[in-house]
Length: 247
Image 1 (cartoon, rainbow, N blue to C red):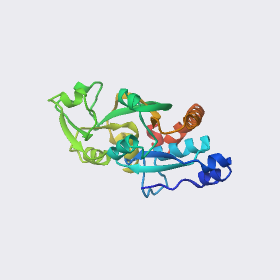
Image 2: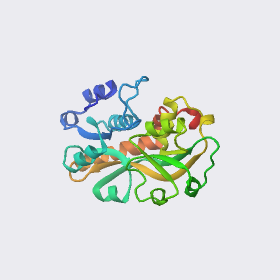
Image 3: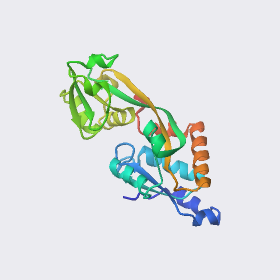
Image 4: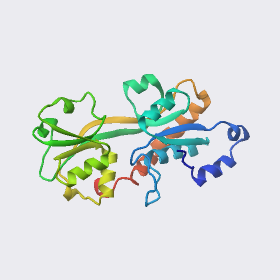
């Protein structure tokens, strides 16, 4: 699916220098997962990563397209010159596969949220407890290897939160953004959960496929992203998706 860009982006394109206006758009790709991309949101939000991509394009004065796709398609498109750039976690694998253009967020957290009354200060506190986590997450983690933790695999964060609400699990795991966003959708407050345990902190970066974009375009993307981060623009965008009581 191709998302329409904002009116601001379209108007900006009209006043770009002729050579920029005639250039091929940078092809962004975004994972189709709440709240990174949203469809028919009642508040009119398009999703955090869609917002970030649009903000970078406007600051860099570059035309873009943004395809919202499942994670497997995201990876394939970047590998086969169908997409150019995306925003995702910086890992040793992505550093080898892509160009790490610029940092978006210093701290992107994976968290575990417990039911009311269940304390947690280390993973071992989940032994003899039931933990919901999205399929494909926590690979290589001690969470998956501990036979005393009963695991419930879910298709998405929404399912995990519903299991926690229904008392069918004792804790739910996921990224802080996805979990806290889902709590807001369910109108859940801090009194309806136990503790929030930070399992892992990583950095989120704008990353682009190698040998696809001109060096000049990469430089524009880097400069735009760095300036937006230093101004706190990305932190402001996050607040659209996480309720104040959790921020």
